[in-house]
Amino acid sequence: MTATETRPQAATPRTLSTGARIGIGAAVVAATAALGMFGPPGIRSLTVLVMILSIYAVSYGVLLGFVDLPSLGQSLFFGVGAYCAILPLTRADWSLWAVLGTSLVVGLALAFVTGTVAVRLSEAYHVIVTALFGAVAQLAADNFTPITGGEGGLSARIPPLRLGPWEISVYDAVPAFLLYLAFAVVAFLLMYGLVRSPIGTVWKAIRDNQDRALSAGYNVYAYKLAAFAIVGMFTAFSGALYAVNLRYTSTEFLGIAWSVLPFLWVLIGGTGTLTGPIIGVAIYTVFQFYVSQLWTHYLIILGVVMIAVLRWAPQGIMGIVRPGSTRNLLARRAAPAAEGDSDE
Amino acid sequence: MPETSTIFFLLVDGLIWGCIVALIALGLSLIFGIMNIINMAHGDLFMLGAVISVLVFDRLGSIWPALLIAPLILGIVALPTERYVLRPFEQKPLNTLIATLGLSFIIQQLVLMTWGGRPRRVPAPVEFTVDLFGVVFPGYRLVAGGLGLVLLGLLWLVVYKTSFGVKLRATIDQPEVADAMGIDTSRIRMLTFGLGVALAAAGGVLAAPIRNVFFLMGFDVMLMSFIVVIVGGLGNLLGTLVAALVLSGTEGFLSAFLAPVSARIVILILMAAVVVFRPRGLFSS
Image (tube, rainbow over all chains, first blue to last red; front, side):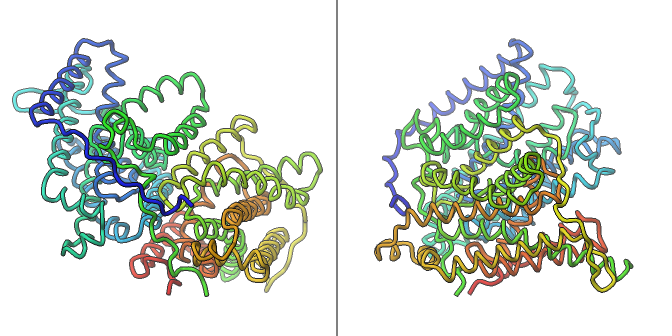
């Protein structure tokens, strides 16, 4: 019986000093910026994807690894964010700031509303209910083609972003690259600050032992709902940037595949870290780009990889690089599932 | 306002579809009850059942043999899959969900590779119509609903009237105690998974003449089945059965007044309302 066996968490990893963290972070940002300015265009556009999706990945890493709120309906927020960016541009003369701001507000509000239903539930119910929200949203969007464009999608011309005296056009590769980099860095720093703030401490307490957090007097439901809403906001923002980068959105972005991907990124990179999801998204993006060109049925490889990583390397890459820094999903306490639910 | 006969037809059609959904949802619920597996590949096993029935139809000219062949083949393949692929993930719903989603991708792509992506239809094996209160029903739909009910009855017999059923229910209620009492729970898990898969396959065979058969056809039925198990309660067999019939009937009834997608959205809102007040399903104690 391996079922209820709980492995003790490995010893706490060596923590890096604040100076070292800032140094490594600055070096990574500088190297990325250099890659964008001087690298070949192919690498540059792949890096843009990684930067934009890293916002999605890191926010999901917060939800899964710091709050223990596994959700399988994040594509709802990603897709809606993408539509927030493109839809107003096809119908009205909005600025880029306005559509990006809209995606933040709508993402936050939508995640708040769906979260009021979803975050109360136990793990299995939460996963299924969030997945159902995403699936039905896609179904609805596919059927309201006059607004959503259906599977064919919508495209728009993206206006330049006004920044004080400057105007940054997403059609100029290098300035656009630096703009996405800036957004990704700001989003990362915000989330980094959040998990290290008092709120983040409560999240980790809930993750480690929800009952104890409850009896310590914390409103677990409110903290989980806040996490779900904030993550929904970042996810929608990532979706908006993704659509802006493509100048296009479609109902595909609401599909379940886009809900599975963040889980995969976090799993590959390492659950319970913030840098792991970025590594995961980078590896996946490169894999997807090259392998999907070689073999149209690359989803088979993806399926095998999902099972294999979960089976043999659930700690992810960060767990291999810095043992003990991640949370082992497999060793997690089993949820008290069908308790009292069977008939008779 | 649609005519009464239209409403009646759609309501009965919804109930018939509910019998097939119940087969899928009960398999999901059983598998969850014993192993805490959220089987995301369940809809794809339904699809495989339908694909096998098309293959059988092409070779033998009838889908009836498939009703035996598909559950048997898929049920047997399911046994080692549970034991050697899924066993390490069991009891952790999220992990099982990701692992079975991996399986789902593999199954879908393998079917796409070997069988192509073009939807196929098989003709209904029986051609007659039934006049019910002045409404004409295609005979096969009634037959499919009836066979669905027969299979549900057989499942009831297995679960409540056999020694396997006793062991199965004991393992759902008290896995440790069942283990200590000398029940081979490992074998029970394998067989339960096989049983759930066989149910999905049988559902796929029954649905093949009603639906387009193609590699993504499992999605729609999965959506409904998940709503059903959430409302009925994961692991709650009776609740799942009632929810399948009530929700499918309601959806059929609503589709007389609304577009199908709006009917589905209403069903989802109903589900959300249920979980707000009864987070473990409508029939939880």
